[in-house]
Amino acid sequence: MPAAMTLSVEAIVAMLVFSAASSSLLLINKLCLHALPAPSLISTLQFAVCSVFIVLLKASGITYVDGWEWAKVRPYLAYVGMFVATIYCNMKALQFSNVETLIVFRACCPMVVAVLDW
Image 1 (spheres, one colour):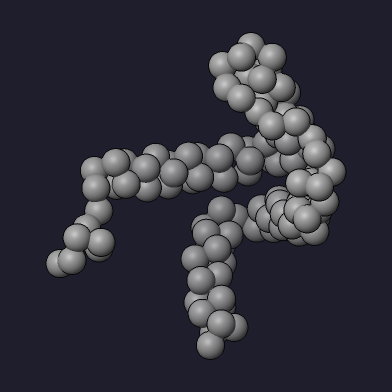
Image 2 (cartoon, rainbow, N blue to C red; image 1 turned 90 degrees about the vertical axis):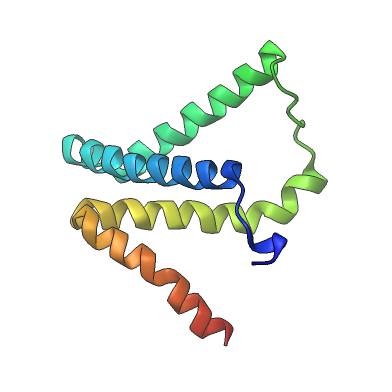
C-alpha cells in the first residue's frame, strides 16, 4: 500500500471521535426535539452557545480569533445561508422521523453527489 494511502493512528482516532460525537449529537437533538418540538429554537440556542464559547475563548486569550472584516465575511454569506437551511431541514427531518431513517438518508448523500458529479 502506498504511503499516501496509509492511515495514521491520529487519523483513525479523529475519525472515531468524530463518529462518536456526530452520532451522540444526533441522539441528543432527537431527545431535545421530543421534549421541545421547536427545531428553530433548538438550532438557534446551539448556534448561540457556540458563538458565546468562541467569544469567551477570544476574551480569555486562550486562542486567537479573527475579527469581523466585511471583505472576508461577504464571500461566505451564501454558504452560511445554505448551511443554516441544511441544519433547519435536518432538524425538521429529525423531528418527524426516527434517527435510523435520517442516518440512512445521510449515508446516501455521497452516492447522490457521485452521480451528480458524473
